[in-house]
Image (cartoon, rainbow, N blue to C red; front, side, top):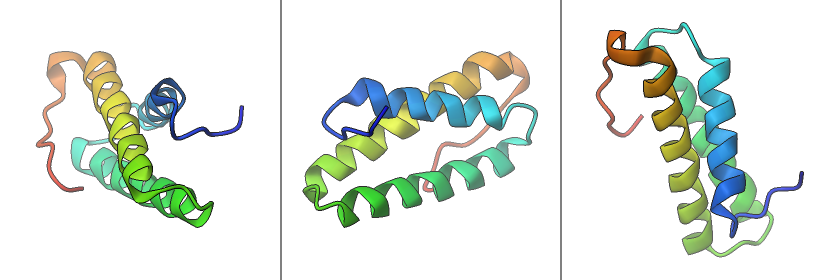
Length: 85
């Protein structure tokens, strides 16, 4: 499915998939991977000519999906500080 940064569900689902791929990693490593994936997503969207505001919304939805899924699959055994990773 092609990425449409205007569709929060698409990028949110991408974030969920990243969290699932990172299952079992330590929180700091997960945050590092999430930060890298978000940076790649942002750069790719901007390179495609999408407005910066739309790119930011897409990245925020992506990160929200990843963080929510990470907490869901990790349960109370995971603790991470959501910062600027």
